[in-house]
Image 1 (cartoon, protein in one colour):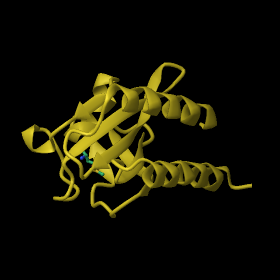
Image 2 (cartoon, helix red, strand yellow):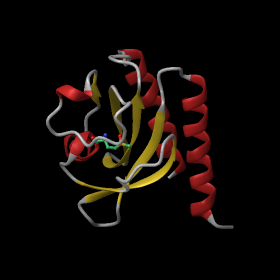
Image 3 (cartoon, helix red, strand yellow):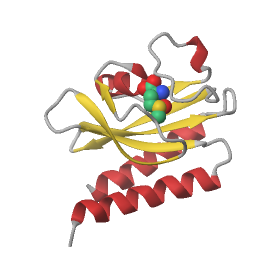
Image 4 (tube, helix red, strand yellow):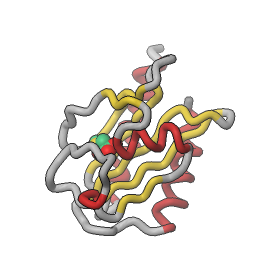
Length: 137
Ligand code: SME
């Protein structure tokens, strides 16, 4: 059994479900801490391919969540200085960290083409998803 393939297929299935069933989720992906390096590495995702497969800690919305350990909701990406654009069609973003034994080991990242679409309900829902993902790791 290749357990990494097994895990990746589950994570991909989660991305597919979220992108398909939530209208304002247009790009859904996972980033994980890359070994012992101070950087994130792209995991399974659904949506347009991105050049940003490696993101240093602190850089962009994702890199900031890697160090803040907190959700980051961006209603308008054009208003952010420390933002990495993956597609010009993206208007908003939400990133929610994944914890294993209290350690921030990765995150779910969602882009939206809809301006200001994310609510507290998205945060609570994605925290729930991240807890489930934590249980798979
Ligand atoms: N916008 C992110 C980069 C990842 S893409 O959204 C897939 C950021 O600023 O960290």
